[in-house]
Image (cartoon, rainbow, N blue to C red; front, side):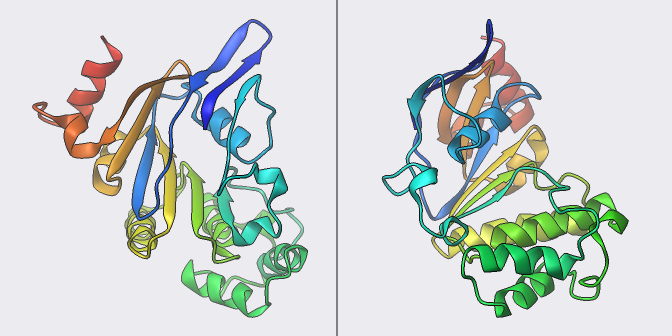
Length: 228
């Protein structure tokens, strides 16, 4: 992305962001609540129009991708499925919209641990189950790029370990994994590279080890950077 900005009236939610996300590693998008992370990711997916700048995915805007679910898998909202739709139906509908084989629905349900819940309606899902269903939707097209906004939200400790290892394994396959979080400890355990923002501006774009430097922890390094 280059010079990406987004204003709502007199409020500038994102202010001139420029960075590149590379494949083969987990890139953490770190910042406090309200730092501009979700707004940035919505612009990456064409869900919000930038005030200035642009985002390109493999050289084109997201809106110009054909069968986008096979190029980019995204988790932005946990409860994105219609409450009356069964888990399998929700994923099957998404698959049909992008000409994805039905076999992928069964595969991702098993991958996220919902194979025994596929006939349940989304309104009966706990927050953790809804999060797993949203992750299944992101994985449905077997995409080379994953954009995940707060993926550990609602997951129990076992689920947190599972999604952490999943993201690392996807990156090890050469995929691009971009994950936003305000949880410093989770980023320390998951990401290799960090993009840190505050008030819509980039404060750091570096490896986790370089960001921590001589600090005792990622928490200390983060506080040092935002207090400059």
